Image 1: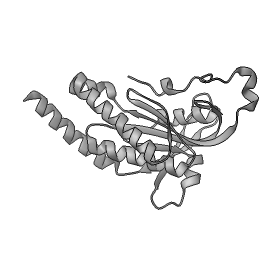
Image 2: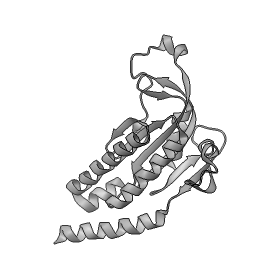
Image 3: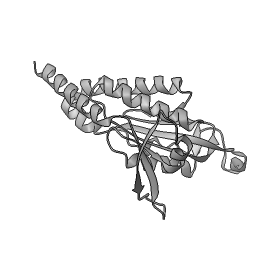
Length: 208
């Protein structure tokens, strides 16, 4: 199955050459990593056909949400996705839509990590510390969770549609200082119970 690290774009995608890097624009971007948690277990429980059907549904949900919120799908393959947004509010609204739609679909527990920062804009993606930090935040998100960096939280704080949870201190590999992150609340407990019920229903149907 796809890993979050595999979704990091190669820095030399496109037509840029090393000698022209000084002309690459640095822009503020909000990056969203998402993947289906425990996808191997899902395949074991539902079989190849059942799991593949759910992964296709996950990809369709992500594509629809990205279009609706004006984002860009940099990578979307297997059970993982890397998305980019010029607006942190749009990125978070997209994350919430994906989680809610996946919760309605069936046994899909998605973990997400988001970070806002400056990155070099390549022809087909981004390069820089912001991309690495977004991936590191996603690595520490739990199933059914939307985990955001402090820089993103600062940009959306006070918006009624986003409920920001308690601070969590993360140890980030490769960085000397710990990083603050925050969970965006969206009734994950309801999603978990819904997922368990649907999983049981699918297993019953398969056994019949």
